[in-house]
View (tube, rainbow, N blue to C red):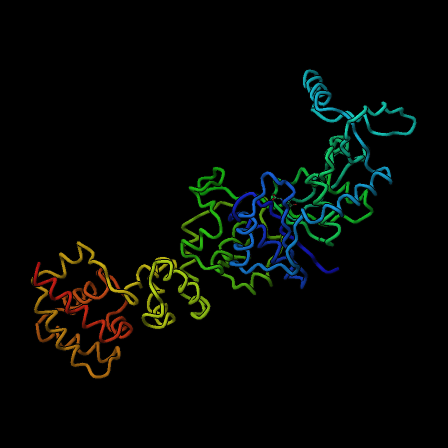
Length: 471
Ligand code: GLU
């Protein structure tokens, strides 16, 4: 059997981090078995679905690299198929028309509640052998209900939660098409999962209660139900329901925060799944190792600090070429032109030890690509005071004489200036840092100056000397 999984979001908001994890689990499971993964947009609720949300889902999935093996699939493009299946079910007697009005149903519910019973459809239009049905009222467009088997139980062998048994008499006859013919959510899912040959349904555990109904419908259609894996929810770090404050943000917000797609995937895969103590996985490793035996049945906790840690590990070890395009995106977003300075890959190598995210890296690297707008006030007060004037003058002279603009000769020139002025290296290095980057932190001076280039270095040292003389 070849595995086919799907991610089936309703486009009512951005692709949030919890949805991305569900998508990732589905994707990994399919790939692990050389199977296929599809993305299905569940947009039948036309009031709540928006094009913006559809776009956000595609954008987020593309950024994460979770590509569908099928084209774009929308439920709203499949209404003919749903109508066909409904007609089949009516003909086969596995579905029936129900003419009960809203008022009737409300009254039924009120009576049941008064009797302290669970509200449910009482089957008044359900055909049974020997039962005489009421006469259909004039001018009423009936809904279609699924004739749910009333005996026995539905056994769900969930790949994460284990066995869950539902008694059939708890399940009333679900509406599968409204009076206007529009099919309902649970029904569309069933037809799609069947038609698309889905072998494993991996989704949030808020859907557990839909599952027995879906299983019964698939069976009524003569198909074999898929296997199910219901993923527990994600809680905030404090154990409360995950909210924005905890990090329940859209995937693209994580991009803006400076995470790489691989870091996000790595962080997400460990939210609920484990493989021994291993924390960091390449995409290939995730695919090779992912399984449901090690997905926890209890809720995972979102931990922003951990996400930053993972991000930093990735930046430190990732293939530079792979993160350069993302770094480019951040620099542009900060209004600098990445062409106007050193190769991105070289800057990444210098910066990655000290930056947890690409946003931080871009902020700390802007000075390579654009003039600095101002000095950090405290740093300038400390390192660009009148005391710095002779230091900067010495540097301009010493560095101006460097023939071969390479880290080694730069290093030697800076040392020589310190020696000549009988200063410690730090006393010379700090004014350089503030002069060239605006603040007193930067990667090693010699490397930084090499990357910055002779002209820019000398121009900034001169500007700093003028500033120091005036302060
Ligand atoms: N469309 C549903 C949702 O966004 C998912 C349904 C499913 O995976 O079966 O919650």
